[in-house]
Image (tube, rainbow, N blue to C red; front, side):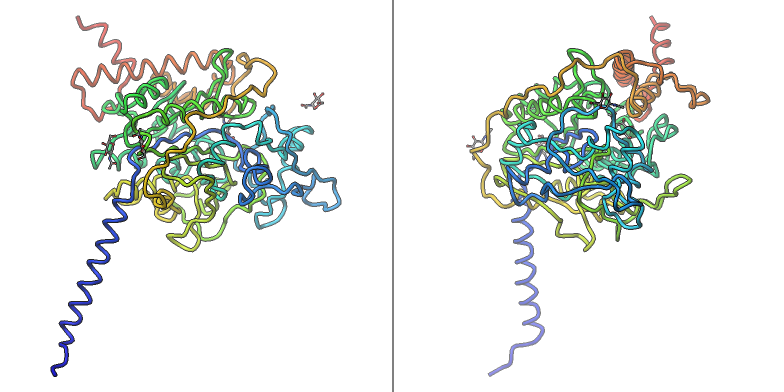
Amino acid sequence: MSRPQPITTLLFLLYILTSFNLHCFIEAQQKQPIKSIVVLVLENRSFDHMLGWMKKSVNPSINGLTGSECNPSSTHDPKSPSVCVSNDAQFVDPDPGHSFEEVYEQVFGSGSIPSMSGFVQQALTISQNLSDTVMKGFKPENLPVFTALVREFAVFDRWFSSIPGPTQPNRLFVYSATSHGSVGNDKFNLFEGYPQKTIFDSLLKENLDFGVYFKNIPTTFFYRNLRRVKHFSRFHWFDTFKEHAREGKLKNLSVIEPRYFDLVGYEADDDHPSHDVANGQKLVKEVYDALKASPQWNESLLIVTYDEHGGFYDHVETPYVGIPNPDGIKGPSPFFFGFDRLGVRIPTIMVSPWIKKGTVVSRPKGPTVTSEFEHSSIPATIKNIFNLKSNFLTKRDAWAGTFEHIFSELDSPRTDCPESLPDVAPLRGREAGEDSFLSEFQRELVDLAKALNGDFPLTSLREETSKKMTVKEADKYVTRSVSRFLRASKNAFDSGTDHSAIVDVKSFESAETRSP
Ligand SMILES: *[C@@H]1O[C@H](CO)[C@@H](O)[C@H](O)[C@H]1NC(C)=O
Ligand SMILES: *[C@@H]1O[C@H](CO)[C@@H](O)[C@H](O)[C@H]1NC(C)=O
Ligand SMILES: *[C@@H]1O[C@H](CO)[C@@H](O)[C@H](O)[C@H]1NC(C)=O
Ligand SMILES: *[C@@H]1O[C@H](CO)[C@@H](O)[C@H](O)[C@H]1NC(C)=O
């Protein structure tokens, strides 16, 4: 009897292993049913504020509120009166604090680990009444669209904003996994456009495509690359989204940008205080209803999330261990923030016929032991879903948890999803305050519009003209600037300008009037 040759055995084992791996690999690829992703990022609300009370009446496995969570009015004095969570949130005015310094106080109180104890104390520095407001959450019946989606699809109850700071840097993480060192309103980068690589670049490289659908101004113009002439045809007014959905023309990634300016008859639907969340609910319903009726429904995924927590209380400690700085850039003085802590937990909901009813997703399974879900999970998962060959954008999306596994549990798309979501009643008893002055983020949007429109002598960066604009004036200015910019970009494209140029609206328009 001859003994089996070790080398033959080895080869045989190797054969079994590789064919098995290959088989799994092919199966994983085939099991990836998502071809069209729609992302909607709303503004400034924490998880507990929006969804915390759903633990009691919608799904007990959600990490939400029990009702006994409280914050002292002074974190230095344990005997100071405390304010506890309640479920009577309505619309909110004024706006709670959410700058870098303010969030630090909310999260750390007066200690050195995230105790989530300083929300009331921080709110008291703004106004007496705000201390109750920040501890309030919504009754699920006041958010009928989210309640329906949480019952039917998936809620993530451990998804954090990418940095403990405001809108602009957090929105940047969603498509680029970094804010390029920004922790607040960075005027220089806003004017020039942020230079970092984005997931849009990675998609285009492999002949996949995207579209941006907006109502006032696309914040995706924060990125310099997206301002280039060659992209003009990828930007659409929101109504085109419904048309594209109906006709099955949605690209692999669609970005929906809510209305950021609150006008009578055209209410803001970004959920930012003091805007009525009922309008945000209506926008989510509109997007869902359009997708559900689309021929692309069976291959679609809708992601609804928030840029940051807006100063509202959340009870889950923010992660601060093992979080990688994305690109080696530190924040500006005086904090020199290392981008090594995440922001407060925010609501994230996902919708697809491939998601099991009533799914609750908590911690990710990797790729490292400290990985969490945060905004960079979106580009990281897009890379996996489309099997993109480009490198990760930064160290942060390489680290962030991904969620493609939630689409692999069913063998075929569900056929029991609601055709349409519930109607929504307004919560705010008065008209939009279109004559009020701008919030900080709205002023940033006006600055962005100035950059697009060529109205920005860099030397006058410190001029705060937009501070004196009303919401109505700003809306008009911003909308007009975006239309002009896109029209000039189209004309430049058609007339053979270098497609990677960024159009200079003013000189382009005057050249146009000069030519016959
Ligand atoms: C990208 O989108 C197009 C158009 O919907 C679709 O035909 C294609 O299959 C998608 N690509 C991938 C890799 O899903
Ligand atoms: C606080 O609330 C009271 C009663 O609702 C109201 O009269 C008062 O104007 C509020 N104060 C501020 C600073 O908002
Ligand atoms: C959300 O928070 C940012 C950061 O503080 C703030 O500037 C902005 O006013 C808020 N967003 C909107 C849409 O106003
Ligand atoms: C989606 O898939 C289901 C189940 O296979 C099928 O019944 C339905 O007609 C499909 N819908 C669309 C829009 O293709």
